[in-house]
Length: 471
Ligand code: GLU
Ligand code: MG
Image (cartoon, rainbow, N blue to C red; front, top):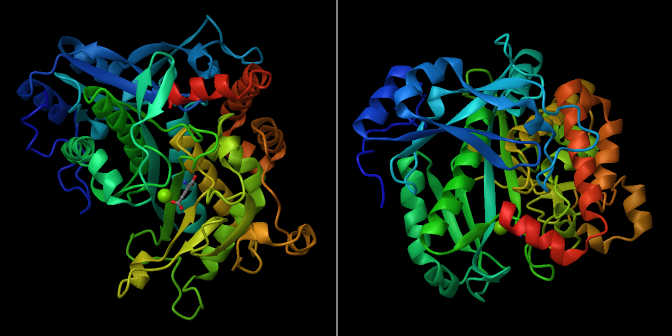
């Protein structure tokens, strides 16, 4: 049954028009008026799984201040639900999950249940160094203070609708790319998903049936980076929760079926002045309408990409997706509307070029923790700005069609082909590790190394089974 009674805009009173933050009193009123029983305090861990604990409403007022306790071990948790052997956290020690009232949503797909996203806070009330959401906040602040930038971003999800039969997953349909047949097959589900997102103040922009069997693509409006990452958790949970009510499973696994198109989760982003009024990626005099700021930002991303991939395409299954000629991108290059390039210059909307010119990172999927992926992207871009790194000539063809010698000559590299290789690069990347901070970087790398060890010898079927269900 769908929650009604949320005609009041519960998440943000002026969504998209300069937000008025929800405060504690708004939350307490909303749970009372909607007869909520449980409020989930949610976070995203180092393997990109959304987890949390729920408080009964009777204790909500005090829990909003004191948080809910969580064992520190959860930030050393690997994909197969064990503590990473090289992780630092174990049975001793607690942090608190402290909710951000401005992220409050009534869950339209679970009766009498609401949720808030949380920060991880130490017992001394300081942000925990291993908290991904605090990492993104630091990068947003760094962009503002060091470069005079505010950013806008959106995660654009592709996902697979499937039916679970015993242990295997069958795609919902055999539909054709962008086809009406595919849109009809999924129409009832998609309509409920759009309603459920709207009730949580997430504005859908576009929808279509994508290339692979059962594959869907839905884009939502951009927002500041923190809200964009918060929205990504809400989007994933909602797509999944609504699917369950339809007897379906919505999987964001990067490569759910080895021979078919993968599920990307491209990051769209742009940089603005601190007032948020002027798009600093736009320059009318450039052939692609891109500013020097944008070129340097791309330069930073491409320079760090072999390591950044450990943050934006961070699961073992991610590397099955990142192959040439699958439009996922597989080489460190950029180009205008080039869907085989890691960074696509997105052509502007007619008549709205000054505000719509932006960039898209294609080497990104939804197995990432969006706070970590987006925080890493900002850190890489800012390094490009600080060092004035020029990205070279744009790629105007499919980079797979160039010879290896041509790619070397243009400084274009093939991506790492395994998670292990990307994590090795991350460990060597001082800029990204410094930005993450020692504790988060160390634990993140320990967890990824555990994942590689767990999956390396297991083969394709095991890998797909475990990623399909988790993401
Ligand atoms: N499915 C492709 C991917 O893995 C993206 C296709 C497209 O939208 O360009 O990223
Ligand atoms: Mg697509």
